Image (tube, rainbow, N blue to C red; front, side, top):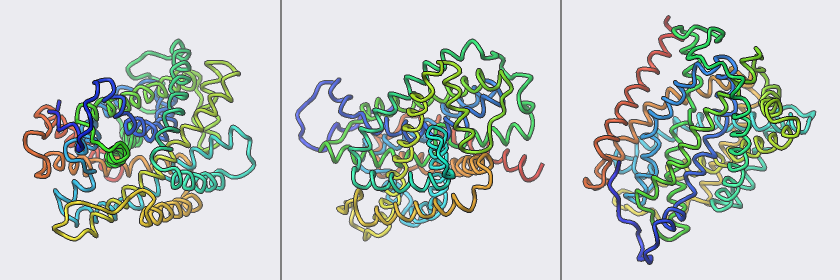
Length: 438
């Protein structure tokens, strides 16, 4: 869909096609690790529990539609060597970068809190801890900050690949076992609300908000690609970036479908209502596996689900501060200086951003967590309403003056991107009308 860019920024010796693709792998897996979190474990499972497979088509369609907005992250790195944050600066100026960081600051803290409380719920369920979920979440955030800050990109990349592999295998097995229990109806009569209703639209927006993830993940992906390139000493071309990204993106889509099917087969078919508390819901998720794979799988799968949620927490504890640090560098770099020489990973601004976001997330955990379900819906809706803006920024950055005309996205993917932006705007307006006006 895109024309290839120069393959490297250094005079590295030619490598085989297989070696080129293998060397590129990393950011796409981190994308999957960040995406396969609350959106999959919580919202996809809940969608299946309440609507059977009635919302599965909408979820897959949303993932398909959002593809260009996410792909423009690694694409931009492949043709410029720079992250989307730098692309925003070159395309729209420092003011837009500053506004982006300002608006994202509370959103990022809310997402960290949402991921931490879900991870804490799994930990509490597995270990039968007497501590409250918010307290466990604080411990996880503190430990995650320490691991991420000291381990950096290489540690994150390795840990993520191992745990994503474990969860993917067990989830596929559990899904296959749940298939016979699914009611294969386009929209079951037993769904929580009629298809054409305000209640279903509100639920759909809440489910799609982070499906497969918040579009800020495109920016994080570009920063991880930039970090990988620096670690390797050369830049991956567009084709290799696309292969790496597609593996992570398609994997996230497949696992989203798996969690919907498990929720539909195990919970919806038996009329099990999703629990409102983090620990209670986590216990139900683990129960999806034990009821399909057998009691032996409960602890094993529970551990894998916890470790993947922990990996999700680690990726955002790295990616969000990385993003804010890159924004700070873009804003404070004097005009006329194109190359950024300051380091992002492990720098003082990175540490300040990590600690600041973590403290804000902890504050949210102890003040806004009256209802796990309402809190999760709020997170998803906020992410969804911001999506059209981020998708627009990514589209025009990928087609901006900083990208040579011959290397810009093809007409097909640009048309796809504009269609996605229009769909996101219309659905957001529909949600606002159904929620506050109708």
